[in-house]
Structure formats: structure tokens, C-alpha cells
Image (cartoon, rainbow, N blue to C red; front, top):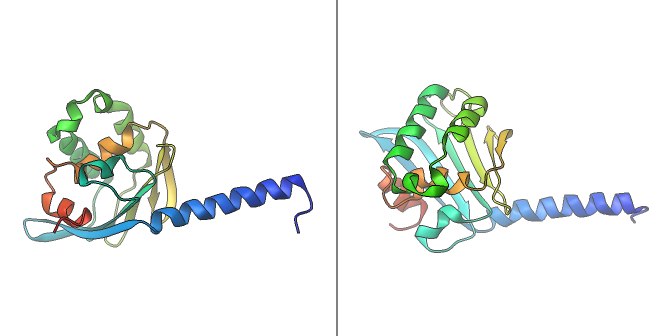
Length: 172
């Protein structure tokens, strides 16, 4: 039995966090493998509340996990992210043009990755997001424009990872 208002509030917060955590995992989930010239680079898992394929990158809450099959230096990861953004049509939209603060933040929080490491990107109901390295939080981004622009790298129709996109969106 709860003895005080403070205990009640704490119980309510914990219950809300548990329900919120279950909510993402109880939704649509798909996995896929990204290969570059036949070499396996990583496996990816996408969990989201569902919807049309072109709407998933705007879904909330959402969880996108990559488990790397190779070692990747964080500077190479950041450079590849920037290159991918530049190739996407969404990068020319007003909401995705101011990427420099994002790049700066990612350079602060992303680690060097080794084979078997995971990097998870979570989008919360309020649109804010966080990264986890091997299931441990490493940094957040409060800018609600970041998530769809970041997820477009894999989920936009003009992604360079079209085979992975089809797998993650169950289009195959």
C-alpha cells in the first residue's frame, strides 16, 4: 500500500516508464541486413507503431538498433552520416537544413564501434531522441526535427540503402 503522495508519484512515474517501454516493443518490428559490395556491415532492427512506409520516419515512439559486424571509427561514422544526408531530398527541406548543431552533438556522443557493438536510436513520444551504446544511454537530442532527418538515411524513398529499407518496412 502506498503511504504518501511522494510514493504515489514515484509509482506513477515508474509505471508510466514501464508502459512506455513496452509500447515500442509491442508494435511493428522488422529486421534487415546492410551489405556493401557483398560485405555484411550491420544488422538493423526497427520498432515503431506502424503506418504507411513513407510515414514511419515520423513515427513516435520509435526504436532503431544497429549491431555492427565491423569496426567503425566514430569520425568515419559521422562523415558517412553527413554524406548520406547530402544525397537525400529531405536534406533540402527547411526542417533538415540546419544540420551543423546535430553534427556537433553527434561528434560529442558517438563512440568508436567494434564488431558486435550496438548503437540504438530512440525517439520518444514528445519527439526528442536519444542514443544508446550497447544498451547504455550516451546522449540526447532535444531538437524534434532531428529524428525524421536522421531516420531518412535508412527509411526515405531515395536512400542509398534501398534493400535494407525494404526489409525494415516489410516491403519485401
